[in-house]
Every structure is written in structure tokens, then in C-alpha cells.
Length: 297
Image 1 (cartoon, helix red, strand yellow):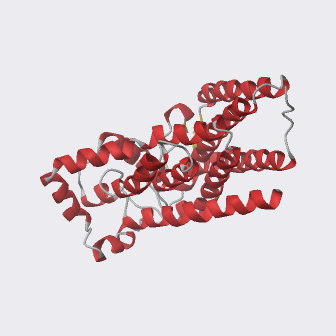
Image 2 (spheres, one colour):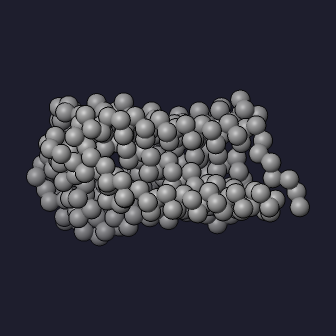
Image 3 (cartoon, helix red, strand yellow):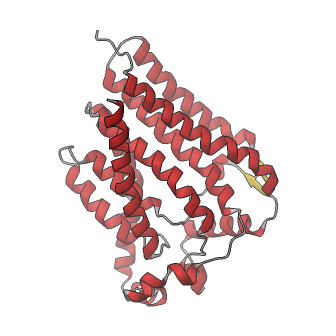
């Protein structure tokens, strides 16, 4: 059985991701009471059990010096769950900040390019099959994420898995100032169109946060927000970059990386600027992740 000791770069990688989670969670919890956000502590239990299972699985494979790729599989899943849930804390806190809505400004690129939201909605109403296809593409992100998180470590491409998680951590941290300053209602709400069911719930949560009334933060009921940058776009690109060497998956992943950002306009309630910001941030943070790992090695 081969040694499964962690290299110096592995230790730095895990340390950085751990500190990123702490940076997102602890300050948010400290500021929650100031913004009348109250925490349902019991809702943390399912997440803690999942993290305990994934961390325990990694520890078993590590301590018994079993297969390295399976240890890294557990670690990759651990960080995917930890980072995504940690991001909810500052996201909710920053959407609580009472700043003016900027829909009329962020929609300007859409107008200049002929994608004025009411015109787009009318087109989709006249061509419902496009809307259905767009919805399908939009919701394919979740299985794409699962593949991007699990396949590289299984294929012993741990470097690609590290790049993915570091890129997502950098994206989360760099997006925080943007979501603190750029608040908008989404095209549906701004123009008075009925949103799709999932975005109706998100819209209600956003309005509750903006109302400054007491708010209960419960991890088992959190909703992702429609924001700038578009994390659907960031995730789609990062998933492709992690699956680009995988036979049979690289081309479908590329197709989804191209189609998911496009589908975010009609299906995700995004403005064009959200998608452009997501593309820029995705490639920027991937380069940052590569530089980070190169420096460690």
C-alpha cells in the first residue's frame, strides 16, 4: 500500500479553503444580530452530518492508506458542500444592506443589444419551446457540478479538482463587494411579469431581506439569489474546465458551458451584465487558482 501523506501544496490548499469558509461564515454570524437576522441553529445539523460523513470517509482512506483517488473523492465532495453552504451566510447578509436598486442601469447593455426584457419575454411567449429548452439547459447545471466535483479525483486528476475548488473560493470572495453594492429586482419583478416558481420564492426572500423586518436564517431553507455576477455562468465554465480531459464528457460539458450562460437570460432572470461578469470572473479566478498551485509547487 502506498503512502497517502499530504504534500505541502495539499496542506496549503486545504488550509486556504478552510480559512475561506471561516471568513464567510464567522463575520456573517457576528453581524447577523445587528441586521435583525436570527439563526435557526437546528438547521445546521444535516449539513454537519454530511460534512462529518465526507470528512470521515476521507480520513478512513487516508489513515488506512487505501486508494488515494477515493480519499480525494471524499475531499472534493467535502469542499463542494462546505464552500457552497458557507457562501449563503455573506450572501444573505449583504442582500440585507439597504442600497438603491439599479435595474435601470444594469439593463442598459440588454437594451443596446436589442435584448430589452419585455421584448424577450414576448418572444418567449410566442415560442414556448425555446423557453422549455432553455429551462432544461438551466437545470442541467446541478448534474454537471456533480460530475465536475467527482470525476477528476476518480480519474486521479487531483490538480483539476483543486483548481475547481480554488476557483470557486476565489469567485465567492471576489463577488462579495459586488453583491453588496449591486442590488436589482430581476427583469421579471421590475417589469411586472409573473416569475417561474423557483424565482418567485427567491424574490420573496429578497424582498424580506430588503424590508429590514426580522428574518430567520435557516440553512435547510436557503435560496440562491439572482445576482451579479451570475454563479450559474461561473459554475458552468468551471465545470467544463474540470471535465475538459474526460472522454465522452468534455464535449457535452463544453456545450453546457456555452448554453447555460445563454439560458440564464430567459430562464434565470439575469441581465446580460451578470453573465458577462460571470464569464470574466470564471476565467480570472481559474487563472488565479493555477498561479496559486504553481506557486505552492
